Image 1 (cartoon, rainbow, N blue to C red):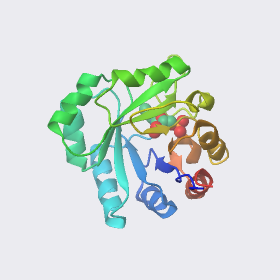
Image 2 (image 1 turned 45 degrees about the horizontal axis):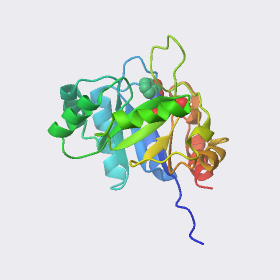
Image 3 (image 1 turned 90 degrees about the horizontal axis):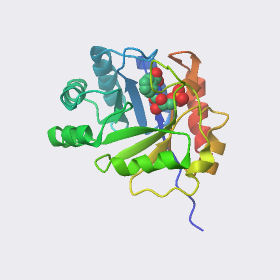
Image 4 (image 1 turned 180 degrees about the vertical axis):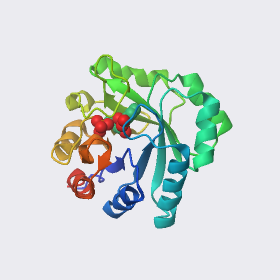
Length: 219
Ligand SMILES: O=C(O)c1ccccc1N[C@@H]1O[C@H](COP(=O)(O)O)[C@@H](O)[C@H]1O
């Protein structure tokens, strides 16, 4: 019988060159940089540019992602081009028109759309985004939250068990080294994303948690 492929992994919210090196050593496919001032993981464009250059100097394979919240299409393209990132993750209330406009100005790299999920019906939002290359399913943020993600909260993974999509997707929200294997088994996710679950304190990544997360996700 054919073995199922190992899930792909994204570690998000990196802020230092050490974080970048630890993610490469652990063997994750993607690394994410948050450019959103209200986030404890925010990096400036200059910092993101340096970290991405560092990543590319360490590994020709690792793919970089910038996380933006409600940017205009013009800003998203300008930012992505300035920092030299591969892919753009939109984590706010962006529309399909914004994704189309980004695509028109930036033909390379993927455009990801994060969607907040708490019910089966929420998964139908995918049909509102024909221009997105990849989806990221995250838990809904707390009421009155000042940022739309990175809360360490999970949603019901069984919602994804029979979900069929014409685009690839990542499972996110509240994943940790302890729960990621079960999350993959229950949801059938072929890719996972984590931020707070691999931090020793808010906004500070931990090398051991990163490497344990990657090996447990692929166990
Ligand atoms: O990490 C943040 O601060 C953040 C800010 C704004 C939007 C999204 C953010 N994080 C992303 O949310 C998911 C889940 O994170 P967690 O593992 O539950 O902490 C992930 O994609 C983060 O990168």
